[in-house]
Every structure is written in structure tokens, then in C-alpha cells.
Amino acid sequence: MPEKEEITKLICIMCPMGCELKVLHKGKDVLKVEGNGCPLGIKFAKEELTNPKRVIITTVQVEGGLYPLVPVRSEKPVPKSVFFKILEELRKVKVKAPLKFHQVVLKNAMNTGVNIITTRALPKA
Amino acid sequence: MREKAIDVAIIGSGPAGMAAAISAKQAGAEDVLLIDREIEEGGILNQCIHNGFGTQIFRKDLTGPEYVHFFAEKVMASNVKVWNDTMVLELTPEREIYAISPERGMVKIKARSVVLAMGCRERPRGAINIPGDRPSGVYTAGTVQRLINIEGYMPGERFVILGSGDIGMIMARRVTLEGGRVERVVEILPYLSGLRRNYSQCIVDYNIPLQLSHTVVRINGRKHLESVTIAKVDEKRKPIAGTEETIPADTLILSVGLIPENELSKQAGVLIDPLTGGPYVDESMQTNIPGIFAAGNVVHVYDLVDWVSKAGELAGRSAGKYAVKHKEESRRKIRLLPGKNVHHIVPQFFDPLSLEEGEQKIQFRVTKPFETTVKVSMIGNNNKKVKERILRYARPSEMIEINIPQSIIGSLSRVKTLSIDVEEVKNA
Image (cartoon, rainbow over all chains, first blue to last red; front, side, top):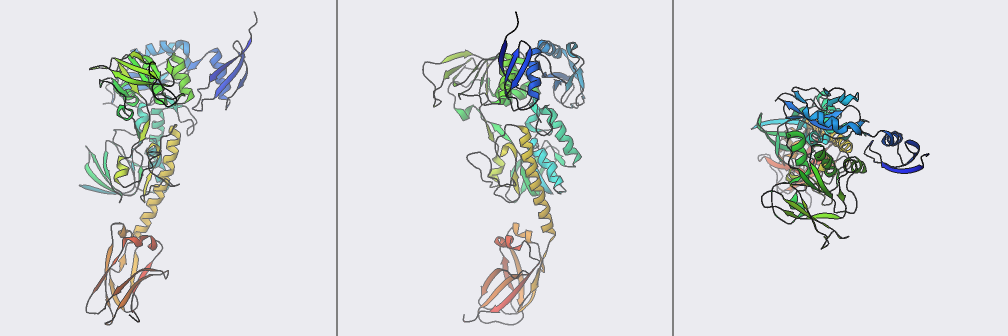
């Protein structure tokens, strides 16, 4: 059975503007995007309907640091399907201070090709 | 007590303060000092580990710590002096700062200009008067954020969040990612009070139940929080009887607004606008006290940190220019010249900025006796009279002392010499 054209409403999360998108699509084929303030909105709409992705942001444990944790992020957004699996992996990670800014704490998380990196430098306690 | 003179002092090294420091330097100020009570720069951004910062200034989607990192690098490169772990206790209208730190003890800092960049603080439970018990387990969103992101503590398992501001929604996601359960987010207004993107990526993404036009009407629990009673509100935000629902929870997070932090400002006599909770400022971000500027959330609460930095940049530039001008002024000495019937004057030179401290006294002798009323006039090289005084007589044998009042400081801005004339008053 051929898929029908339908409209899905999304809120773009590419920047703080939060454009309300009206996406005309046939299944996963995006036909038209309305309401986007910039080209990022089209990119977001296409990805959101095919393979939604989010940047992972959390903390990992640090040994001997100024603070017991260091904030980390994924270098790029990762598919939502592996989001929680990566978080689980990150719970087991423990790194040693001192840490550099944008130091990799987990390489190629869940085979996504995306590294998890620190978002600050952390000196020793 | 140690004393230190400085061109520009900036109180608070969050996004407003860091931007102010950099632009004060660029405006030509030599000695710029950035003071903060925390052990590192960045202010509250250090605990805002989520992304969404910097899209306006850096054209990149950065996390709070990354935004701090790039700004702190610029601060370093600008040769700004940074005093962390230093608490400012007092600010005077004369721009004297009393600060204390473990490293330096108590220090008095005399600044040519000051930028207030203390940011804001959260409204606590007391500010919104929620009835009920007073158990532990009730926190502001920022406190929970600090506990989870910096200290490494999870304050509870089952959460209710009051307020749908950005911090409230971001904490709903954060708590969920750390294994907590957000039972409900309640918002008293009929609409969301934070950004739509946060509703999308923090609430919708995790299926967190959010109720608009609802509020917390009771906090329950003897020692620790046991449950929270919520109710629907009418258009006047009054709870509607019969709509109460009690939700078991061990933690209540309050995200109910921010208030500019102006304790120091008020000490210095800075006037506060009751509508914003921050100082009245002019287009250069100067407050009613000359040389005291303000920027960022201390003035009014912003949505985006990028705007806070831009406000800091403006205030810093103004404060830098003010300090430079002030310094030039301080190098300028006005020559006091004996005019008609005056033999000599002491002092011969006079620093107009000394009037900031209070009135100044000068002494002189006349060349001949006057036994009738005389008029003493102080006249600038621009032929403008800045002061006049009547004396009943004037004799060379008696030294005359008159004061230069503080109020004339404004009329001296371009004056190079001041002459003193003594003349008989006719028909007296």
C-alpha cells in the first residue's frame, strides 16, 4: 500500500529560536518544510523523521580531580536508538585528573563513530 | 589592610563580567581586575553542562562549560587580573571595594570605575509562600543542578518540578538521565514559560507529564518530603477547590523565577527599578552613581547568555572609557593664579578629582587692606565664574581661607587655570 502524504508538527531544536515546523511528508520522505527560519530547520526535519539524533550531555566520574565529576558531551548528535545505551556505558567510565578541554573519555561510543569528550579542563584536586 | 588602586574593577566573573573585562581592556583601561567568590571564572555557566549556548556570539552550539572555556581564554589573552575565591563585602559610592579572600586577606580596592556583574539568584520557597510542612527535600533548580552536575549527588528518586522555565525543564531531563523519575512538571501559567526547544527536547523526548494552569498547594512530610499536593488554578491563578491531587515524591524542585542580585549595588546607593529588580541604567549601562556600571542578569534577567555577554561588553567598554578619562583627569592639575589684589595662593596647583573626596581649602593673602566689604571671585580661563564669596574686610596681615565646594566639579572639566580676584563691593 502506498504511503499517504501527511503533516507532522515539530519544534526545531537546532538553536534557541525554536521554530515551529510544519513538515509535509510521505512516510520518511520529506516533501516540504514550512516555518523554518533557516536551512537548519530542513535538515532537522529530515533527520527527525528518519533517524532522530540528540547530543548526549552528562557527567563522568573523575579520580583525583578538583571536582568528583567532569561534564562531557558527544562530539556530534547520536541516534536516539543508542542514546541510553551510551549513557549506560558512560556510567562505568572513570577518568583520572588532570583532564584537558575536549579530551576523549569514550571512543567511538556504541560503534556510532562518535567520541564522547570533556567540555572543560579539570585540574587535580 | 592592604590597599590597591585599579582602573576598572568587575564584580562577578560570569558571562557578563568576563565580557566586560575584555572590552574594558580594549577600551584602553590598563589595570582591569575581575573578582569572583568562586574558585574559577564562569559563574553559574559552570554547572549548566547542557548545550544551547553561544549560537549568537560563537555561531556554535556550546555547553555552558565550553562557553566559559572560550571566554576565559580571551580573558587570559587580554591580561586581565583575575582574583577568584574573593568575596566582595562592600562597595561604596566612591568606588571603593572591600573584598576578602584566603590568599590576600582583607583588601580595599579603589577603582576608577566599577562594573556590577553579580548576576541573579533564584526565588526560594519563601518567595512564593507554599503552605504545608517544612521538610527537607525541597530545592531550587540551581541547587539540584549543582548537586548533580558538580558535586555528584542525586538528591532523590521521585521528583515534582514546579515551574516550566528553562531551568525547570532542563532539570527534568537531567534528573531523568541520572535515573530519577519526574512525576510531574507543573506550571501555574496557562502557557510554557521557557523556550519551545526545551519543551521539545527535555519534556516531549522523555514523555514527562507536564500540566499547565496547575500549581503546588501543599508540601507534605514531617522530616523528609513525602508528597506534594497540586491543584488546578483559575484565570486569576487561584487554586480551584476540589481539583487537588497528591503526588508521592521525595524531592520538589522549584524553578519559579530569578531575581537580580543587588545587595552590593544598594550599599553603594545605586537606585533599583522596582519593575526589573535591577539598577536604572543609561545607554552606556551607567547607573545613577557616576563610574558604576552594571550588566547582565544583575540589570534584568535574560533568556540567552549571548545577550548577557553583549550587555557585559557594552558596560565594560563604557567603564573602560570612563576609567581612561578619569585617569587623564587625575593627571591634570589646575593652576591657581593670583588675580586682582591677590598676592599669592597656596596650593598653587589643584587636582579637580580631589573634589570627589570632599571640598578642598585654599589660602591666600591680599596685596592691600580693604576695610569695607569685598567680593572674592574664582574665575576659570574660560572666563566663567565658578565661585563667589563675600568678606566683610580683607587685610594683607590676615591670611584668608576659602573652600572649593564639591559641587563645582562638573564646571571644572575643561578648566586649566583658576584665578582669584578680590574686589571692593561698591555701594555696600
